[in-house]
Amino acid sequence: MTVPFLDLKAAYREAQDDLRAAYERVMDVGQYILGAEVEAFEREFAAYCGVKHCVAVGNGLDALSLALRGCGIGPGAEVIVPAFTFIATWLAVSAVGALPVAVDVDPDTGNLDPTRLEAALTPRTAAVMPVHLFGQPAEMDSIHTFARQHGLKMIEDAAQAHGARYKGRRVGGIGDAAGFSFYPGKNLGAFGDGGAVTTDDDTVAEKVRLLRNYGSRIKYQHTILGVNSRLDELQAAFLRVRLQQLDAWNQRRMHCAAEYRNALASLPELRLPHVPDGIEPVWHLFVIRHPRRDELQRHLSARGIGSLIHYPTPPHRSGAYRHGQWRGARPLVSERLAEQVLSLPIGPHLSAQELAQVCDALHQFSLNSRLAA
Image (cartoon, rainbow, N blue to C red; front, side, top):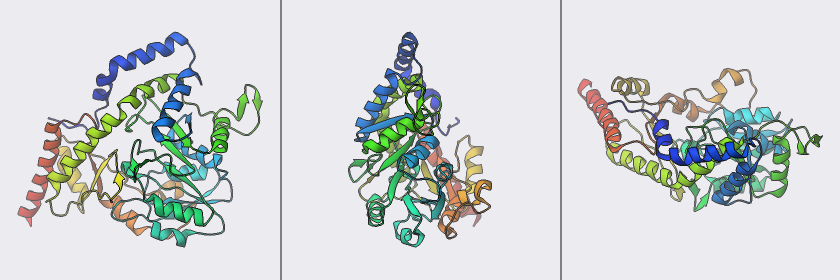
């Protein structure tokens, strides 16, 4: 039996009747841009996140860059970002003309290390952008205190953390603004690209609404330099269906993570994810660490088990930033993580049999290693 990394077909099949009804609803109305479905999804997702405003946009990268622009971040500014993250976090900062300032991450969680923030501060620092990596919230109290002490904006990169809670509060409503992605593989995934900005700030929300629609509130009247980044009606209708499933599907992910943690706890060399007190991750990814990661991945692949590396190349080592378009000390923790992390199959449709197959393969790898020693 093969074990897919994520089964998107099963996700469709479970909700296909409701998804087809959503499709028919949009087709019958015949409006495909900024209509009633987008407005309804914005209301529903804002309520879910516990914020006043949700502004739906074209994708997760746009959500982050427009959140920055909505908070007044632009050319000449510096934005503190984690050194270990998907490159979109950094690209959003570059897109608004600001400079990413890399801060290394906590070796236990992979999230931004608050103890390193002070050393990254300069007179140009305008914002800090913590990432809720792999669906686990960052240490927001310390980051929030640092931001307020220095008059900085705090923008959450919540692209992987739909529904996650930090000390009882859902992510997306902790900072000045947050950016979400609805890429199909996310916990709340569309059937194409999509994203959203959430905020409690009326001014930020209004600016992002202008920015996403050519800088226009009234057709053919353009008050600021905007872009075209609008979630379409069809994807909004699909997301409304998926939002109703989100908590239940997150619970399934949590169950899978608990099974993994119990079954793999005894394996030497393998390091399981660490969850601090007060944190409720939604397990967008279940990421282990192993000093022989590549060998382990080949072992899994030979047994029909899908796995991925999130992420093999930290942004500062990518071609996009190789020539100094960032600042910061060399992030040694992030570099080590990039050499060791491996994401195991997880999702709301991972069966008990499939999960057991993954665990058996990991135990076999460990046994083989001990016998060969």
